[in-house]
Length: 335
Image (cartoon, rainbow, N blue to C red; front, side):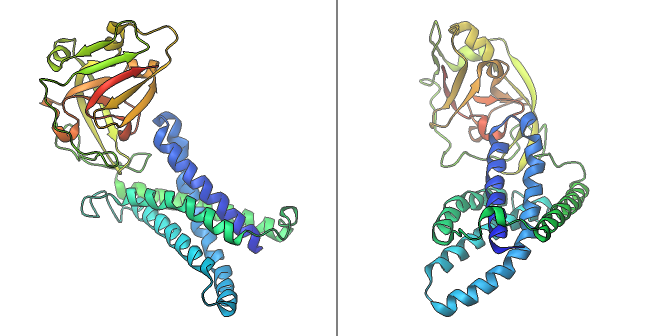
């Protein structure tokens, strides 16, 4: 396969991997399901294509280092390759259950996989700026031989992807979700893993002064004390918390329906979405129709939420990933 065609395929696969990974995070689970399979399939295509790429790399290194031992573009290419190999290696190890969300001293290898994948974006752009090829022209790249190799790569990708998937399903014994997350205990009250979004820390809240504020495009802005929320009709939701750190846990959550609060405040006719905002600043916006069915949980199982799990109030949105279940909710802003 021509060198430029190989490089363009690698670029396309890396871009598609980053895009499918990010979209799989932020979209509702029902929409994201095809992306999970696509992401893993593209990963296998990258692994196979890298076997061919290494022949090109060896030849290029001999040529470039022979001309200039201090060629800085080689360093950029090497760092990019390490990030790509690291991300692929962790993803494959995760899928085959060689590592778990507790493998790195409580820090999930899946988070490192994502971090390396995101780091590829600036690294690949820098590498392209230094090494972009213009010849041969794109229209001249696909010969009959190249087309046959592309077909072979596609077939090998499909076979290897299904083989890896079947192996992963057998190892997980039914506890692996489509997202790749692994079971971390269910119906356990507060006894499931605690993960915190990015640089958030567990805030120390004083219930005497804490209030849930509901504002924005509402008729009657509201301010609710904790005891007032507890006095409202209780709603329960049996829902799976699927954390992007790679674990999942099914629990029974109890609290107040967001729809009841929005009804009490009167949503403006033109409003279409609302942002749920943590006292730490973390926020996530959702369509009003979806948010009305969500629960602002005060309890998990028969236990009051612990501080690490979002006390006094945590958003529970079935079908959304864990980082969208905003903890320590301080306000709802309707727009």
